[in-house]
Image (tube, rainbow, N blue to C red; front, side, top):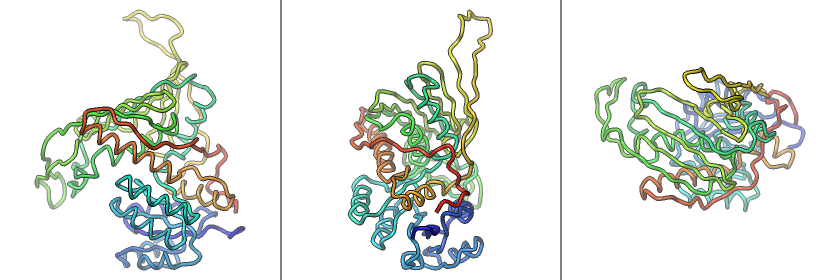
Length: 377
């Protein structure tokens, strides 16, 4: 309805719903009208906590005629099933990552949405935060010359040091690649465009691990997936990237993303966050012969935009629906990220390069003056 906030519903009242509700209930351009969950009491608790007028089962969301977009916060294994029910109810979908767990059903969801004239948006929307969007504008301006390659790293000793039931994070469909990979791959695609091919190697640091905290501390569980994955990405436009995803590393190093061009290296914030420091290191101005110290020019890039958190992508989608323009974090983008991650898994198994068969058109951006707290509708 033009001239009014976009009605939003949420399916899934688990832990991550707090992160969405904290922001969505503060954005003037959207209004959260209902929360639904299989555990209806949990939905009612969240509704009371955030002042949402209606709560109950899934039908409390799907049956509400004033809701235009539904946020799918269910577990990945049922993302497609729940998103299809949202489309069938005549509503747009914003889905937590990933869009699905396999190519066929995920593509089927997009086809059903297209046939119904409805939109699909897919997390992570960290790539829409001021950190990555500012860095993207710097690259587009030519601040580092022609982009050549990237290096990223996510490494630590694993979630069992804090999680009381970590086994599912080492089961099929989990692991550092599928859990954290969407943040890094999404960021790289924003910078370099679609991925053409991948190569990867994987290993297990051990065949079993032990729970370290909580009532199950000391219990062993099996490792079903590679706990370390080394990845090479080839992008359609010619750039390359090298990435490490590991839960076998005593060294704690998250959020390493370095984009190197012909005129500098751009260091950006952790892609699992919405903002942070951005800087460019320039080439040496003169020859340095060891043991003389290497001193390079470092340029700080001011971060542009309002720093918020999850819900930013849904807000862009809501405003785009009203303006009849494309939103940025589209279902097609989310599918290409999934296709890339599945291709990496296949390369690990085959020990050969794997082609990424999907592609995407030009990827949109948010403007520097995008203000989540402005009433624009």
